[in-house]
Amino acid sequence: MIRKESSHGIGYSVVEFGDTRHVFASAMPRTGTNLHEQARDALRTIEAVILEEGTRGSIVKQAVFMKDIDQIDLCRKIMKDFYGDELPATAYVAQPPCEGKLLEIEAMGVGQMPGDVQIERLSERTVITRHDGMAWVHIANISPETTTTGVYDRARDVFKLTGTRLNDLGFRYDQVVRTWLYLGDIAGTDGEIPRYRELNRARADFYRDIKFGTNHVPPGLNRPIYPASTGIGTGGTDVTMSSIALATNRDDVVLLPLENPRQTSAFDYGRQYGTDSPKFARAIAVVAGDFATTMISGTASITQSETKFIGAAEAQTRQTLDNIEALIGEDNFRRHGMPGFGATFDDLALARVYVKHQEDYAKIKAVCEGRLGELPTTYATADVCRPELLVEIEGFAFSRRD
Image (tube, rainbow, N blue to C red; front, side, top):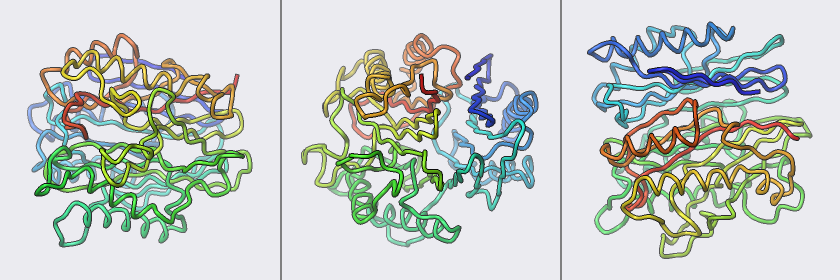
C-alpha cells in the first residue's frame, strides 16, 4: 500500500488508499547558489516525482523551510511563478534546513486512479480537496492582524482568523483535525511569562466551548477530543498557524483521538507546566471504512510528563521514536477500541524532525534513518517548547484494518 524511495536530495512515498493515491515528498536543492536557483531545483525534483506517479497538478499542500526569514517574500514570488494556477496551500517556515541549504520543501499531492478528485485552489493559503465523500481543507500561513504585541492576543487572533476563514468557506473550526503552531522564541519569556504558556492559554480559551469531532466521535468516548498539533519554535518573534479540517457525511468515518500509554495526555499536564495545559491529542486517526490515516503530533523525549535523557540527543531521539511506535501501534488502537488499525514504522509516509542544535543533526539523523529506513524526512533547525528538549518528531501514517 506504501511505496518509498529516496536518493540524495529527494525522498518520496506513494500511498494507495482504495482509488486514491497520496504522494508525499521532501526535496532539498542539489544545485544552485541563490534562492531562485535552489528553489527551482527542488521544485523540479518534486514535479518529476508527481509526473512519474501520474498525478500531475496534484500538489495541494506544502511547507517551505527557510534559512533566511528575510527571503520569504522572494520565495513566495518564486512559488507563484512556478505553480501558476496550481499553487498549493503553502506555509513558509523560518526554520533553517539542517543540510545548510537556503530552503527545503515538503509537499503532499492527492490524485485518483481512476475516478475523481476535485481540487479547489482558492489562494496560496487555502486549498480544498474532495474525494471519497470527504472534503479536506488545507489552510496555511495564517498570521495575526491585531496590532497588539503579546503572544496571547496574537495567538488568539490566528485561531479566530482560521475560524473565520473556515466559516466563510462553509466549514467550521470544530472540524479541524490537525494544527501547526509556529512561535518565535518559543522557550523564551515576555517579561516573566513563558511564551509557550501564553500560546497554550490562548488555545485553551479559544477551544473552551468547541466540541471537536461532532457526529464522528467513537462510541463511549468520555474524555476531551482535540486536534493533533505541533507547537514549535521558528525565526522572528511572531506566531503563525497552519491547519487541516475535515468535513464528511459518511457514517463510517470515525475521528479517533489517540493518547500514548507512555505519556500523560498533554491536556492533563499538572499546573507546574502552566495554568492552561496544551489542548491537543497525541495523534488523530481518521478511520474511513477499512483505512486509517493517522496524523502524529509533535512528539518528544517525554514519558508520563517528564523529560528523559537531558543533554543526550541520540537517547532523546530513540525515546521519541519509541513513543511514536507505541502511539500508533496495534496495541494502542485496541486500547482505544479500534483493533486492527494499528501501524508500524513501515506504514509511515512522511516524517518531520525538528533539531534544536545543528551540531546534533548528524547523530539524530543516523538514529532516525536506522529506525525509519527510506522515509521522506525533513530535518529543520528549530527550538522546542522545553529548554531541555533537543528533538521533536511528527508524521503521517496510513494503515489498513487487518
